[in-house]
Length: 421
Ligand SMILES: C[S@@+](CC[C@H](N)C(=O)[O-])C[C@H]1O[C@@H](n2cnc3c(N)ncnc32)[C@H](O)[C@@H]1O
Image (cartoon, rainbow, N blue to C red; front, side, top):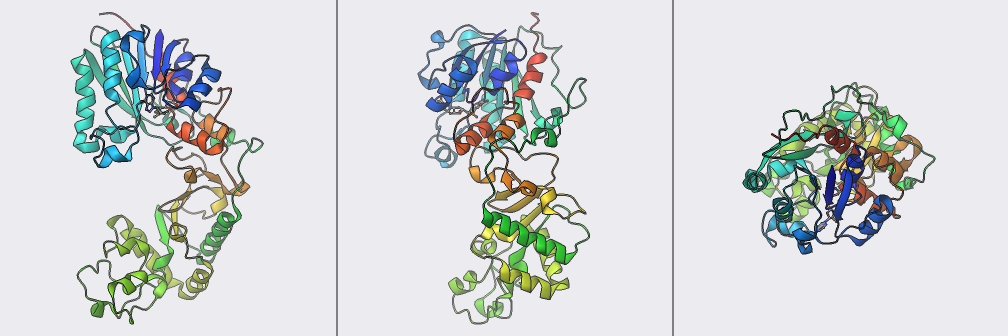
């Protein structure tokens, strides 16, 4: 079949469908560097802004693919619209082209959140727009790890089938399908390819946290965070209704006395950053904070000595988010991500989702003191066959984090067999 690739990026749809023998006849991408790369990798020059493409200039096709950008339904200027650079309803342009050409299938991909944002009104809008022009809509949330690729990355895949096409034979790919080849993360990792070394200050902070884990001898850490500012803290979980006088006898972050605070500004400066705004512990941190206070009570001296070595400059480095093995608390046997909420420790068998928004969350292999390389990330997106990736590491991770996983598209494409009713 012939397909088109709107918002084509690195070409995850292209790779996946071409692996099934389908042929790309048109693509479209606003970013010039990505257009250049697409031409090198796929031999086709993408058009630029979809909003300027006339539907009659798009060749006839059987499958329309679109990984539409993080889509603000709100008008530009409103909260979500302003956050997203591509304001306006880009999905309308996908519908416009589908309405003109009436391809047999429309295949869309996005974050699962697209189903629920704005109380589901955006999703209703997308579904209704395609139903109105004669498509039946079905969708599945699928992650590469379900289909043998060691990356956790839940995305929603939306299939529109023209109403005169019998799609009874179509099956979404799933973990139990025959022929799914499981690739381990070990097979993906290849430290001979160019990778960035881990900065020494990050290695140092990981070593310091390891020192704490070794010293505490915790029996099991189960999806909990160790929140260092709670070492010695006694302030109430919710102090929004208390007066300064009532708080005098409590201790703030790292056991700092609140006794001499005459103003709220003085008091809040001695509190952990996460309670400064609401004057209470956020609900989602309660379990970890109680755990950390208990840990401190059982190991007071050790924790106090340890906390003296901890630099207090970077708030997020004072929290260790343990999502790793329950019994073996060895950081270097895991994957690490420095996140805004804390240093996250993940099991070593599956990579976390590659994300486009920030290069600071590129996964780290602590045993090799390095970041995952762009070539390894390309393998996690099943885009390792591309001739060229963006030169700069940050641009490469941004594009890979935006891309659709080509293996999932390949497996969906394999089952797209048009049968006229
Ligand atoms: C979520 S990514 C899709 C990635 C793609 N499916 C892939 O596999 O790499 C969205 C892409 O749409 C592009 N884009 C944003 N606004 C656009 C517009 N108005 N016209 C064309 N492309 C646009 C972005 O530059 C980005 O590469």
